Length: 100
Image (cartoon, rainbow, N blue to C red; front, side, top):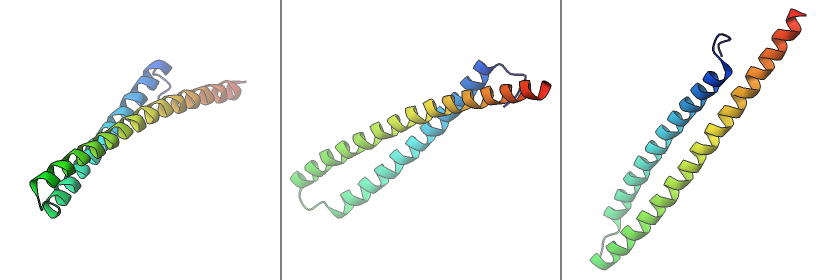
């Protein structure tokens, strides 16, 4: 972290970078889920009625995974903000001690 930047700016930068990273992770996870669902759909399509049921089940699975990805994104953003705040506070304390 830069000593020249204000603490608020540092924390907002850290939070935005964490949010961006988690967003990318969620996108890649969703892509993997879609690919896996397509593979399963190709293997298991004996009847049209069964295929409709499996599609509904896949949609439910996708929705569950996406929401968990969103939750993890929020958690990691919060953790990153807390960590950066703690680190900057520690650095300031060390700087004060070294000046004494």
